[in-house]
Image (cartoon, rainbow over all chains, first blue to last red):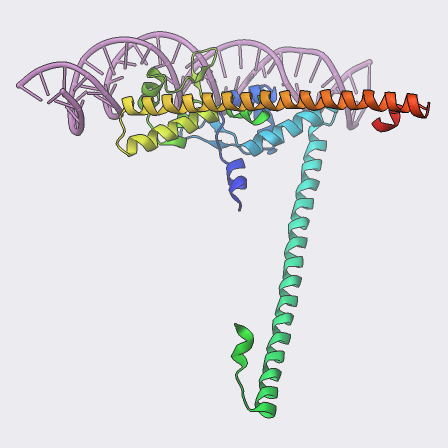
Length: 135
Length: 135
DNA sequence: ACACTATGTTAGATTTTATAACATAATTTT
DNA sequence: AAAATTATGTTATAAAATCTAACATAGTGT
């Protein structure tokens, strides 16, 4: 996880601040939590603490609501987005794996070459000081 | 004022959050406010709301205190820093003014050139379509 | 030894937030 | 059209967080 991801998910804001920042009522914010669109952290005393990510999501919800999308629609949209994000990271992992594989192949070839060079040097000029190639 | 400056001075955090973020007690934070090292905003109900800048200052104070500097010293340091910042912006303004002046001179020269070009064209070849130079 | 500094602690008042229940306009379903 | 559902408002009550102010105190500086 990167530093900015940590910062964006750090629980910092009480509901009052979030209300001002998002122009949503406390009732709305709690309602969206009830529907699991956000999961703010809690203080020891059970007060909600929202992260920057939570606020982003709330602003997104607000936009969609303003555009007439209902809760079911929003849930679906979020679900799809999450799937997208998931497959995206999976693709990235797969690509990384492929890259790692071909790296491995490169290394294999390199090894072969080195061995060949060794043989060549030994058999032809009897010098055998491969290490020169690695300085 | 830039966008990030606005963001950094936006009153967002209640004292509890600031306590956790800075590892200072409420008593300490209020004490530093009493000594005008910070000036957090207030809610309608008189609760303090701190900005990111406030938190930076508090962390700076904490550092200095950990290094054994007392309040008087911290005040002096902050005072000096503020003076520095002020003279710095003044220098910037002065430089800008100088640049603006020489810009003005450049424009003056350019104007002269244009007028000359106009005269030249009119008197010699009778075409006078200066506007070509400005496309 | 004495005054001052920086912080702790406590008390009582006020504000903010929590949950839960009931109310309701707007929309959807039957 | 009537009934059900949805998204939000409103209200009541309890608990948590914060406020100011006062007093306490260990450590510093003179």
